Length: 618
Image (cartoon, rainbow, N blue to C red; front, side, top):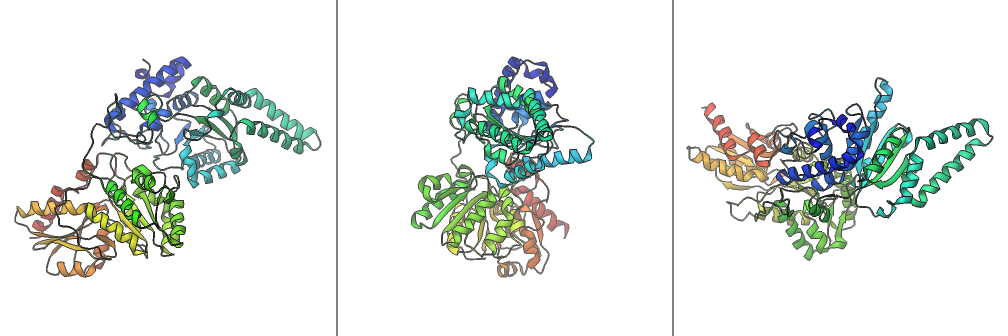
């Protein structure tokens, strides 16, 4: 009824609160319909519909700025900011990004896909605004309770409270056990302390006491303590007050009659402010309300039942890792597992269910996860840390200082390595080879198939050295190879003897390399294939031996070429090497198979590349 007439946030201001309630239902239905077709982050976005409607109603966008932490919550924001017509292309190639994107809309100040960054970004905007004095706009950072498990969020809060800048942080919680505080008394207290008349009176009283009364500062401290104590009786906000923020909440994040006047009042105040709202993940869609974890990042599903539309019988690399780790842990009590708030995504939920006392979920805190693993390893345990490639970037210093410098037996299992797909540039795991292979004391491996992954995991756990194993977000290919040879440190394996050319392939690219060679054989070109297994250390002797009489040597990897696996091979070979891999650029969203084709990492594209090199030199 209303959504079709909303072209931008200013259109909201023409509606009554009752109309906005109806509009929120329309937005929620639009999100469900699109995500059921495209997949996406459903539960969190359903939970923030009213909050986003209220923000767009009270602010003047795009002059005012909203910065969403991560962006899992932002689908309603996209729909209200001139993107509704294209919303059906969500997460598709050349379509709407699943996260806020500054290249997509003037309503998105930043491209955000990693957690706990919003407050620091918002504070930077506020300080720039005040220094430049060429604009007057409000800045709001919207964070979730998960963001508070990341250290960067606290660094931003600490600095913002210290600087006393005009900044509003909205904390949206949906998991913490504080819902009893969402009641009449809490609402009444927050209504009082957010009213303009209360705050004008408070400010005037402060000025009078400071300037007219002896010991005025002491009286002000007592007054502040009284307000703080009043809040402390009913409101879990003392922590934020101590950081320098005025705390308001918690309030019902689905009640527009409360949200809108509260927001208007708080936006009129100055200084660091934090509004605490309580929402329900999956609000308005029963399957997501009952199972918000599964619908956090959902594959396409049937709306009526919530069941996935496609259930594959082919296991993924993640599932193979999950099962093997549990199998190994049954025989070795020293194996412990660590995740940074992603037990289901990394497959560690199976380990958690079998060995709860040896499982650690540290929250969205990758730096802590790696550092914590160092402590465990130093005491004789065998920690396995499973983190997505894109998120492991956040722990780079800890990998170097706390793991490699100490030479500790920590196993880094790097899931979602290479092209991830629909989550786009913030999530593509294409940099890990380049950022790890130049470091001392680390062993870096990549499996060709399920059996090799199992063997590598067992080898890594028993090596008692820092090891990283990378694999893609993909199903395990039907292996055309024999059972892999025993894993030995730095040793590759020859899968096919060479005649005209040689491909040295890594991990997920071994199978496409094999298929490309089969295609070339039909055209009279006969190539050899080495499964590198290791990025570091390299099997230099084998590479040189096999290629000694060959003119054409190719490397193949699902990672960036600059500083990647091919560069490592090129550095040690005494003849030219042609590298095939990904460019050093941010890869857009799209289905994995589409992106592999776009960046010429399919068997046919590899065949064409090799054929063109050989024919052009003859």
